Length: 226
Image (cartoon, rainbow, N blue to C red; front, side, top):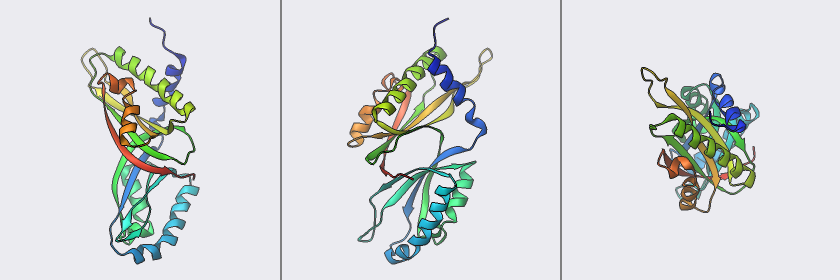
C-alpha cells in the first residue's frame, strides 16, 4: 500500500465530518434602482442590520468593489454567509432594508462548502472555483487532491490566497462493485493583478493542469476585515 501523507488523511477526516454543520454560501447582490437618494437614505439602517449579522457570526468574508447608481458611486459587496440552506440566505438577506425596499437584489447564491483557511489582507481578490470532471481512476483523483491541498496550504503560508472553502462533490456514480466517489471541490480567494493572473495561478493546480477539473474565475474586489 502506498504511503499517504498524514496531512491528507487529516484533511479528509475533516472534510467528511463537516456535512452535519451549516454550509457557507457565496452571495452576490446588485442594485435594483436608479434612485441614488433612496439608497443613500436607507444605507444607515442597512449597515446596522448587516453589522448585526456580522456580530452573530453569520458573515464570514466580505468583498467590496466599485459600482454606480446613475452617476453616483456606491460600492457593492459580495459576501460569504453561514446558513442551513439557500432559502435561509434569501430569507435573511431579503429582509434587510435595501432588499426589502427593492433597492437591491440577490443575483446569486452558491453553496461553497465549509471554511478551511483564512488570511486578512486588503488587496484585490479573485475567486477560483474548481469542479471535478468524472475521473477514470479513483487513486489518480486522490493523488491529485493530495498534491493540490498541500499546494493550497503552501499558498496560504505565502499570502497568495486569502481564504479557501471546500465542499464535497459526487464525481462518479456508484457501480455494482464500487461506491460513489465523493471528493472535495475548491473555492479559493487569491490575490492577483487581474483575471489573467488569477487563471495562471489556477493553472498551477494539478486538477486543472491535468484536465481533471474545470475552473471558473470571477473578481471579488477588496476583502474587508470584519
